[in-house]
Length: 271
Image (cartoon, rainbow, N blue to C red; front, top):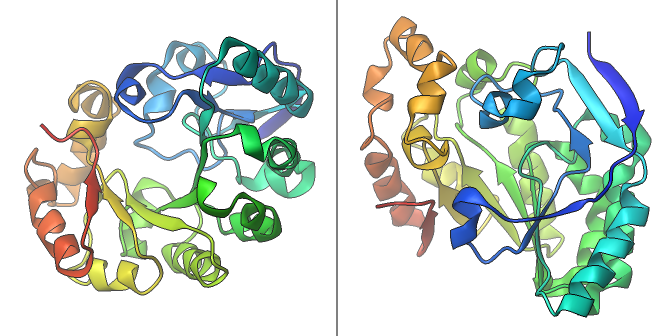
């Protein structure tokens, strides 16, 4: 049972920190607290704000009901300071999880940003939900200033069911990404975090997008894999007899496959 409640927030644009300091982004934007998809490997559940919640990760969603109002104010503050506005939505939740279908909070934020699009340098939407296709009409207004990144950690739905059973099926994500691409929206498939997958991964992704990114637990969990291990992910790999996929260099064979189909592969935080 997922507990959903409305909350008021003090701000909505958060200056980037940690690994994102090396990126082109200046702000993160999280419309919700918590995530109903409850991915077993999600690093957010290891953060203090999540660890001290009474509810388990994946069993609560807080809706920031005043987010749209705050966004207008935060954008204006950034403009006054002369801070470039390049937004990553979202880093600690999924902006298109189930609650969004009713609340339309993310859509309201897009409407605010569309009015301010001349002042926004770049916007990345990061999700694993097919609901994202609902907002194609708004995405088109941003032209090349936007990209929709769909998390496709694996092309094997049986693997998805092990690590993130509450998240949308892989075929639905691929279809959504294809629909976005065909609508002329800049898109990207994000193999992040990389899970065990098939040798057809590159061709499967090339059929739905022209851009791809790759990340694994060792590059992307913020603690070189130690945080992921504390969450018990290594044990799952051991139980499935898939430890060959849980090695620091395992991503390299996937990178080779992706390079056969994509001229550029963004590898997150590669040493």
